[in-house]
Length: 106
Image 1 (cartoon, helix red, strand yellow):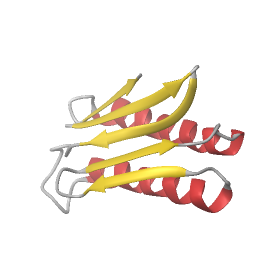
Image 2 (cartoon, rainbow, N blue to C red):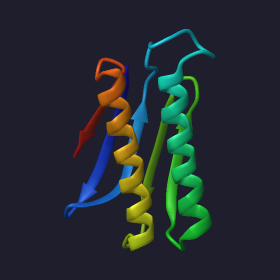
Image 3 (cartoon, helix red, strand yellow):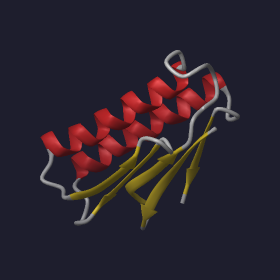
Image 4 (cartoon, rainbow, N blue to C red):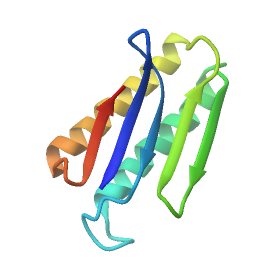
């Protein structure tokens, strides 16, 4: 299962920690894993390209882990991008089941 932890501070999304493999299908055919990866990488790239926010990003492909934390006071555009990511992840979880993707707000 993929576990997506949404990091919040004062009700603002300031980052995320996503880890695991969905197990929906074999590696290379897993559409849940592919969708989560595409949304996550696009969010990181968009924050980098479209905002001035400084982020710490860590990843470990073997564990299927990626972690992002915004270091400054988060801008409205960066928070919107993070909200969009969370919306996409929640919709994937609803469509395919939380046994493949669990989204937790902290």
